[in-house]
Image 1 (cartoon, rainbow, N blue to C red):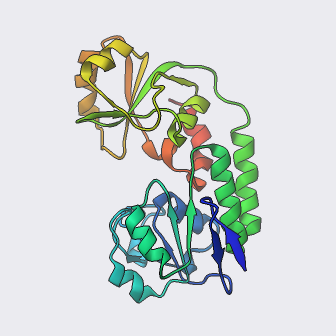
Image 2: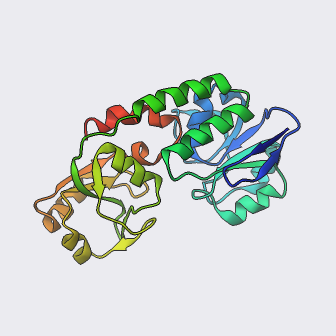
Length: 252
């Protein structure tokens, strides 16, 4: 059978995959929530949900550096990756050996399409449809506006989230007006950050592990801003973790 991934590539599969490697933490969690944990043979060292999954599966490396010998030893019949999160060179090498299904996600609609596509390909349509139905309900009405915001993902250099990103869409749904209108993940100087003067400064818990100790520094730059640590998974994980997002956004 043939399936279309989100890069518009056709993936030929002789049968429903039984030995899956996931290269993306949020998609690994989704596979488990689709009831497919027994079929997962390999994950990355960053696949932290569900808890202890890494102890039950083989670690194939990170999201950008793969141990090709380990992957080969697992004899996967499907590898699942993501255009942004995975290293292109490594992915292309894997594509030469194995069926590789790639997601490409910028919006909630892209996420729902990914969930639907994996459900169809992996014979888990019923659970995929239930997740999609709940997410459509959760995200039907955005939250009331909470003011302007800047979302930091790195400290030195200061890297922020701009447009054309999934996080930007989540910011908008959560009620924040993103002041960064440059695409993707631009860098800011401290002077530029001060000049933008956001009402809210959101310090993500990932990929840079911002802690409460960083709040004091940024508060000295932006004394009037509301500054807090936010759970980066709720803003950037585009699989079944989204089921927890609505209740989280209600409280930030």
